[in-house]
Length: 177
Image (cartoon, rainbow, N blue to C red; front, side, top):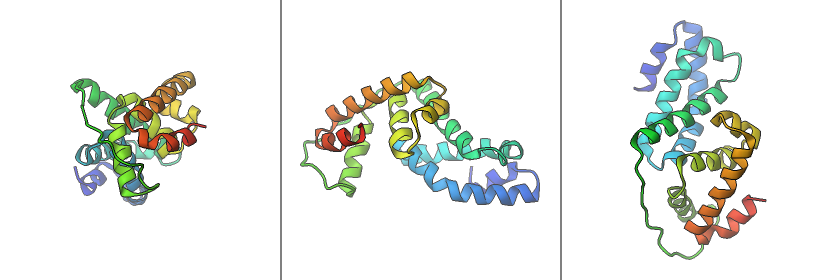
């Protein structure tokens, strides 16, 4: 479904314009999070479109509250639901490479490969906490779990990332403080 088709879901003209502005402003951030979450650009684009359709269908109620939080929640829940339906393990090889330069394209690739070693829930926690910069409480709310679950999943995910990508260990140590 294209962005134009998403707009058809929003009923009135004023709401449509307001939704369009909101969707255009949020789509890049949602897509970035979805790519990190899924590791697949095509699947990420699908997830974002699904989330935008669901926000559009409820725009009348969401526009005065927090449509960003709702969109994020839909994105993460839909991804976990998709993963549960398919339940397959993705095995990836992480080549031995020298420690990449911080912020480099090489580092971004290493991070993506390392994220592929996490479970969908662990990946969701890491993306929400460290890429979306949400608090533990906000992350728990988006995923519908307790703060304790977020803490334990963060700890396990960071340990798994350190094992999967030792060249990022220093960065991960700094992030987990």
